[in-house]
Length: 286
Image (cartoon, rainbow, N blue to C red; front, top):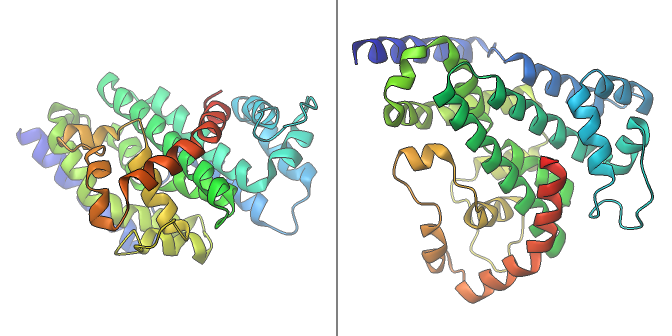
């Protein structure tokens, strides 16, 4: 355990120093996602420029076209066969989410350690599930833009993704995965805050992550924070770090009454949103 302790300490000190300096180091895959987001955010960027950036990443290109042809976004089944038309169809909010999803998936596949790769794959599936539920709930409730909710859901575990990617430089951490999960839990919030600052997200999204009480108590969910909270209850793919720590997110469904949520109301909402969740899940994973 000596190697674990020394590497965990070194990793923590490195992350702390980078946060203090405001220069958190990103994995290459996330750099691509960030570049596309900045292009999409800039009023000076043309559709052609954004499409050209997407084309530099073959997997993202293919998934953008696939998503544009998904039933949820293409109800009239008009075929989309090129990236520019696909970007126009899915919109920039969905493109931001898809770019991050592809980056996170590549991170999961490229991790050097089989153990960490399995965790990364599980975390990616969990995040996609949260994003799909967030989209579906927002579309059903009509209180938040569904594309915004989907992107927020995908970014909810960004700190864990970054820590997992950077852990490749500290191979002893895989010797005790439950303790590594504790390490990630300790650092995920400050790392997430730093990453979200770099991504320059709008206040409406940042406020949803900063809420000390993630559920406001009203029914039905009335804002983005509420939707992210309910999506976290509904998600059917567990966070692998929760599993390592022996936590059961599904228990939250049983405790829903403590948040003034009637279990029958919750069940009805989830059933109503399930079809759209399935459609977006397929679009993000395809």
